Length: 80
Image (cartoon, rainbow, N blue to C red; front, top):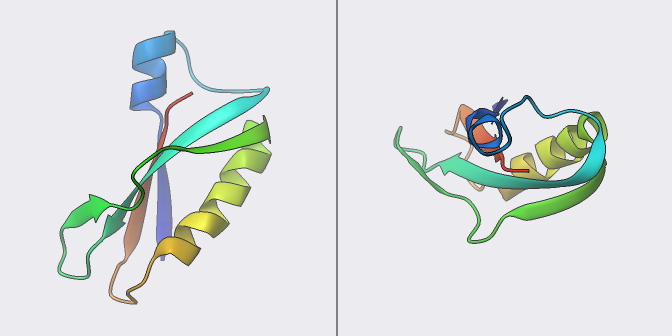
């Protein structure tokens, strides 16, 4: 299963690509098994550390949130 990180919201609000150390917020969108997407979590998930570490942790959490094996992709927005 593929986990795709999208940086559009972060770039729109901060004017630059995300990088470095900080408190990162992620919003997860899961596939519902029928080919469409639905919100995976009501509120953003916050992880403190480097962006690389936060993405690695978020990838594992997003895969754990997926309750269907038919989902081929999980979308994760980096919010800040």
